[in-house]
Length: 159
Image (cartoon, rainbow, N blue to C red; front, side):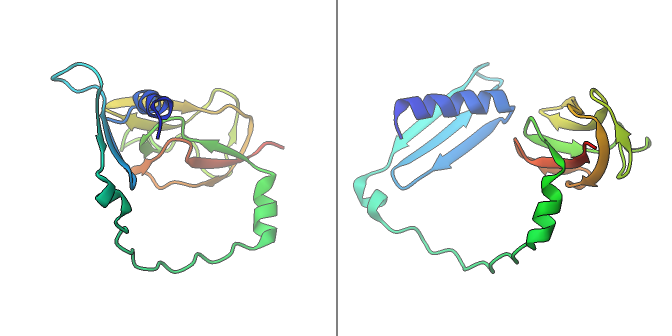
C-alpha cells in the first residue's frame, strides 16, 4: 500500500463520519481515528509488519455455505428499479421518532426532495432525501439497523 492510497483512505474515513477504522493486510496494519476529543483531529497509526508475519499464512476461516444463486428473472426485474443508497455510515431509522409513523412505506409515491429515512451518525440525525420520483417498491434495510456507505436502502420504480 503506497502513501497515496493511505492518504485516500484517511480522506474517505474522515468524510464517512466513522470514528475509527482498522485495516490489516499481510504486510501492513492501519488504524485511523477521527474526531477524537483529546486531539481534536485525526490520528493515524501505521505499522509495517515484520517479514516473518507477512509470510505467515492467515488462519483458515470456516467454509461458509455458498449463497443460493438468485434467479435471472428476479435480477432482470430489479434492474428496472432505481436503488437509493446510503450516503453515509450510521444507523438507519424509518421513523422521525419511535411514536411517529414511518417516512415512507412500500407502495408510497415519492417526489424529489421527500425525506425517506434518517441515518444517525455520531449523534447527528441526517435526513436522507429522494433524488428520484416514483413509487417505493421495497425497503431493503430493517429499522434501527447499522448501514454502510453506499449500501442499498430502497428500490424505487421511477415509471
